[in-house]
Image 1 (cartoon, rainbow, N blue to C red):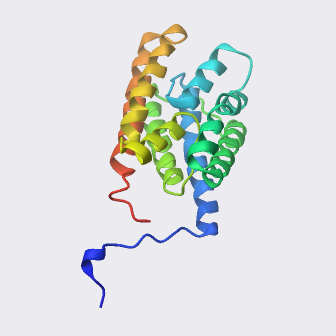
Image 2 (spheres, rainbow, N blue to C red):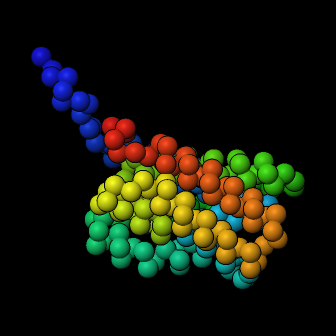
Image 3 (cartoon, one colour):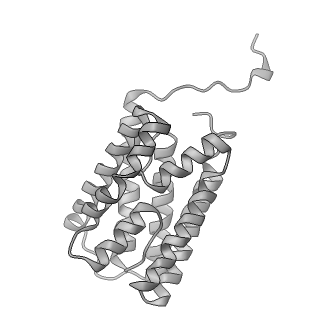
Length: 205
C-alpha cells in the first residue's frame, strides 16, 4: 500500500522528452523575441541586452545573444553542473538559429506594438518555463535566477523581474519613451509567468 505521506514521486524526463522540450521552448522564445524586435520593444535578460545591442549596431541579435551569454557559462559550469550547462548552451544556439530563420519565413508588414508586446512576452515566458522544467535555460540572468532559487529559495521569476526592469530601463538611451514603457510591461508579463509557474514546491514533472 502506498503511503500518502510520501507525496508524489519525481520522475526524470527521458532524453527524447528533453530534446523535444528544447525545440519547443527555444522556438517559442525566439518567436516571441522576433515579435518584440519587429515593433522595436526591448526585453530583459541577456536577450534584452542583445536586442538593444542589435538596435545600435550593425550586428544581428543572434550574434549578440551568443556573445553576451559567454561569461555566464562559467557560473553555470561551477554551480549548476555540466548537464545543465550543455543544455543551456544548446538552447542559446537554437534561439540564435531560430532568430535567423523567422524573418526568412515570416514577413510582418504591420503589428500593433501593444499586441506584439503582450503576445511576444507570453510566448517567451511560456518557452522559458518549458526550458526550466527540463533543466535548461537561456543563460545569463536565467542562470543566476535559477541558482538563487535552488541555493536560497528566492523565486526565480522575481529575481529576473528586478534585473530585467533595470535592463529595460537602460533602453531609455536608445528607444522612445512609449517603447520603453511597453518594454517594462512586457518584462512584468514574462516574469510573472515564470514566478507563478516555476516553483519547485509545485512542479513534480
